[in-house]
Length: 116
Image 1: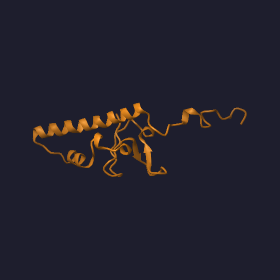
Image 2: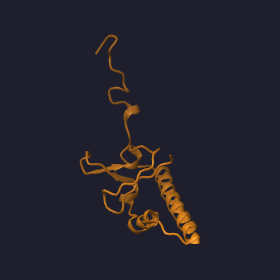
Image 3: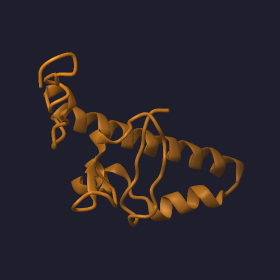
Image 4: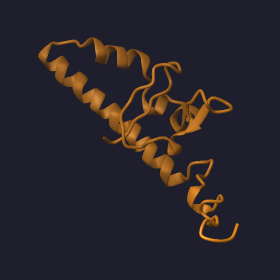
């Protein structure tokens, strides 16, 4: 289209709007580091409560239902459930990285972890 409303290359599917379908090795390493950080927080909270002689239902539920990073299969580490996707899975790199939420709806092996 010509004139003031001609489409630019980013708007017509250029490199700016494309998200690779697979995670790179550094992205996978950062995701594993995030999952290990969550495991460390849970272990720290559990140890602190054990020293005080307390038990929290939420921490016990987390330990019972959620696997540690080394116990998770790669499919669960790097993808999330999304009901709008064709095969119901979406890469974690296309989801928001800066939020913390736990997804219990896709079985016991899925969780989404962010920084803030």
